[in-house]
Amino acid sequence: MTTARNVSELRLPWWVQPLNRVLLTLNRVGLPVPMAHVLRYTGRRTGKMRDVVITPFTHAGQQYVIVGIPGSAWTPNMRPSGTAELRHGKRSTAVRLTEVTDMAEKREVMRAYPSIQPPGVYPFRIMGHVSSSNPDEWENAASLVELFRIDPAN
Image (cartoon, rainbow, N blue to C red; front, side, top):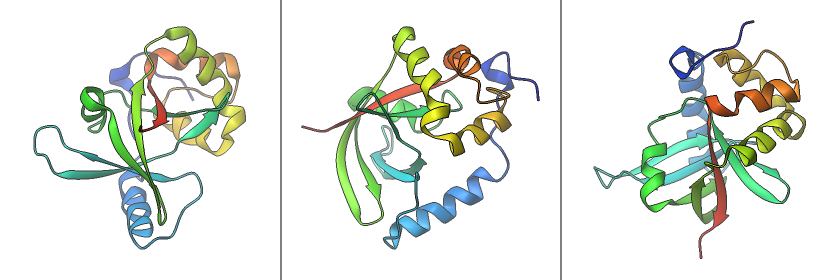
């Protein structure tokens, strides 16, 4: 598999939307799914509550989420206020998401990701970010993704 050279070449696998609908439904009835969490946020234009499935992970004691397709619908909603609710089954936590713009931090986190969350490598391979779990390849893919740090809201 060849890797994408720019953002316009990135594509979500066809099965992501149907899978996300199932994960959202399981979460609504209180069944937590390993790795999959639901981020609930307020739409910046509509003011309506929106839900999106994310797969947060922890690196060096800090929680992060990688956005595989930059410009995904939920990311512009996070930038202005950064506040949201992170749900996992019946558990819910108020959080603040901050976009990581420091390339050194992005490269470090991306380099670590395949060893932290091996099952998460597969979707990124399908999208064309990487072709393997090689940490060097993941570090180089840092420019193709958006990365958000997740902190408890205070």
